[in-house]
Image 1 (spheres, one colour):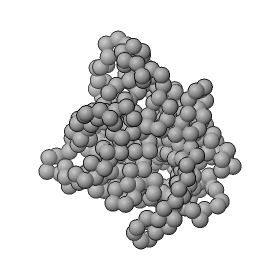
Image 2: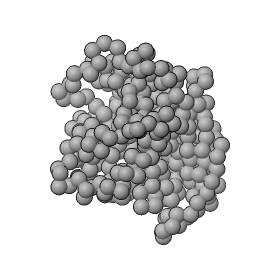
Image 3: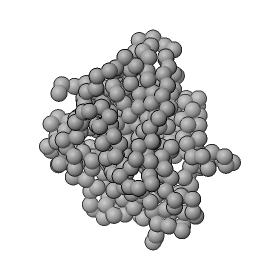
Length: 334
């Protein structure tokens, strides 16, 4: 475990001392360790379920880079911690600082897709169990982003007693029309994602005259630096790359394109917030709108769609609006 503390340089909530702790948590499978980062106010000494949050990443980028890359001095983890939350972020196996399965040292085509949704949910379960045991609480809040929203939805449907509130950011649902399977037969174990293509993918669907308005170049540079330094092998390459498990494509083949949902929204009982952005081409707003009425048994559901944002709105000009909306939901009446 590594521990550190620091002061933010600005006023208000950012002036509080934040404690940072890093852990390698045993997964529910042998020889796999999961990287978990924790931030909370150094003054916190009592732990409450409704003020404990675990953040889950999507199918391409690791959790610590998505949730804890600072822009103008603070990350989303900093924001949550500064507002009195005991916040954790997980790197699922094969991502970031967690164990890379042995298949990721071989040629991608030597093995079939690894780290599918079933595996991801097991890793989420291991992280939840670690946090609940550490803090001696019975439940916590989950935030899932993109593929992570599917994992969080599945975990919550199967473990309703352990989830106090659920936030699904850019949630996936059935695609219309269904896209063709990019892999005619076997899905390779993992894929190589190069940095020089990342910005074009990020801004796909954004009008040209709006691109630098929603995403200052310095911000995108900081985010991409954090992501492409997360793979120790790819960070040394020119151009740099990250290795990304292909289990997400296996989920798509076995569930979404086969007409089967990865989880049953009707089994989710906890309050749920769906968060979407206007120019998200990865999980377009119609997906969240389709999912919303299926959350029929939630004890309070909300849906918000922000204008002028992409699949990564937490790194864009409107990010404080997104932070605040999610914060308001988390702090709602219990």
